[in-house]
Amino acid sequence: MLQSRAAQRGFDWPDARAVVTKLYEEINEVLAEFDALQSDPDDPAAQDRIEDEIGDLLFVATNLARHASVDADQAMHRANAKFERRYRAMEVLARSRGKALERASLEQQEAYWAATKASEKGNQCDV
Image 1 (cartoon, rainbow, N blue to C red):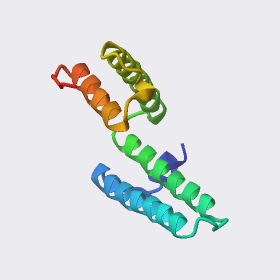
Image 2 (image 1 turned 120 degrees about the vertical axis):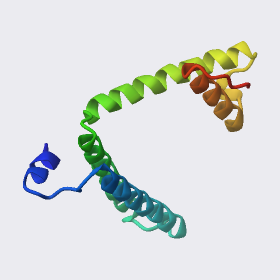
Image 3 (image 1 turned 45 degrees about the vertical axis):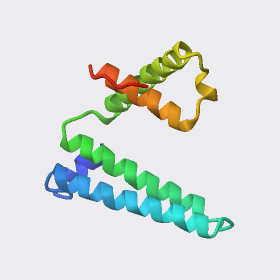
């Protein structure tokens, strides 16, 4: 892994907190590029800049995983599985309320998501 090789040579953040600080910096850079795109939607290089900034964000997130001794690929697989499980539970919840999820407003979908998440964690959340 490129990051590990660089870290072995001393090019690394001192701790996970420093990596999180860098994540915030990268998030702000992504937001700035989205703002620039809205200001000038005809800018042909805007998509490339957004892609570069999102790549930087993902790179730093991968470094955060390394600092936490977490396998980034495994973490993504788990996150995808969790999303899929929760999304399916949202569909079931919507149907149990007599609604098709795709016909629910975004606000209602977010409420279903919160209820599903709370249910997984053993909490109550009324929808």
